[in-house]
Length: 235
Image (cartoon, rainbow, N blue to C red; front, side, top):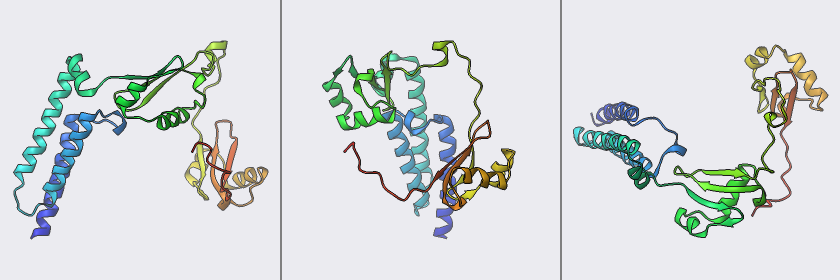
């Protein structure tokens, strides 16, 4: 009987969580502010307690979940209408770097260290601070980077070019396995695939880590390399 109660409570908590999530709104983890994140954890914890409780008191945790969700929903409405309240609850954007100046106090306020800062720059493709004009820490914890105009990647509009439309790459081999459906969709067959791999010096499909085909029917294969990089230069 206890197991049946847990099973029914689990199903009920999942349904309740789904409905409350729809009420609050679907957002990715990276888009959540601190207040929404804490509320999400709290509601999830109450749901877990409701699912595993054997005291058959289903209404108390359910009421708590609903109250948390409704308050979160009401606060989201208020923050949409009030800039001041939005800054109090969601925080505000912090400038970390501008014109060759690192703002130490904002680093401390954001609790971000210089190694993490440089790592985020590299992730976004900037390995040299001299290529960067400004860096901001956004409300959701993501870093925004404004490159210097001379370091900004050139775009076709800058040189009055009108390139042809590109299509997404089609994955044909993944971890040594041929994706037959994708191969057929690309308009090719296994004989063509083996021939293209052989031209790239790859004799066995099982040696291929990834193979993709572009809109011009050009295949690019990546083999499973066994050797390691020389060293980690960023530590």
